[in-house]
Length: 168
Image 1: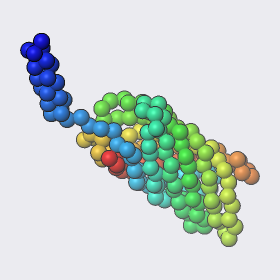
Image 2 (image 1 turned 60 degrees about the vertical axis):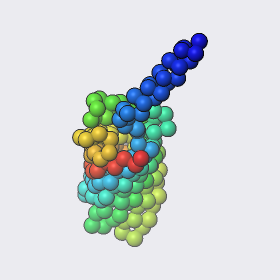
Image 3 (image 1 turned 90 degrees about the vertical axis):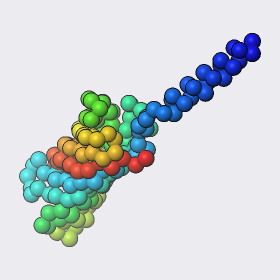
Image 4 (image 1 turned 60 degrees about the horizontal axis):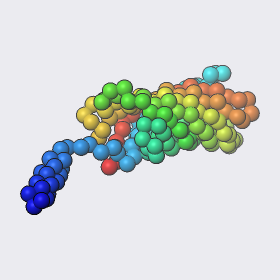
């Protein structure tokens, strides 16, 4: 009986040492996206360009990612601040590539020719994430479609791209 207890204690210590020696990469707490964006109104108008900022968290692993972001789109005659909350379904394509499909609400604050308007819209986006050296730093490419519920029901397409920074 004493030999069995000693063997069990030795197995626990040896087993825990082997587990702690392994390098396990943990998922990031959040992912910060920093890049640039452009958008075009489908019904006409000039292309708008601006910086793109977002933060992404994973409340349900492999099922739900939440992305909150904002983009000030600038043209010669106007400024539009687009702020969105996307609900995304992630798919891991390989160790270095992920794809997410997302949909969610968007609020647009536009100032053009001395007039300010606020509208709500829906956004649909595909998000490609590339992690060349593990999930520390990477880059993203995110095409999107927006449909405004405001007057005129504007529709636009856009794309954003930039750097991914994992926050641990």
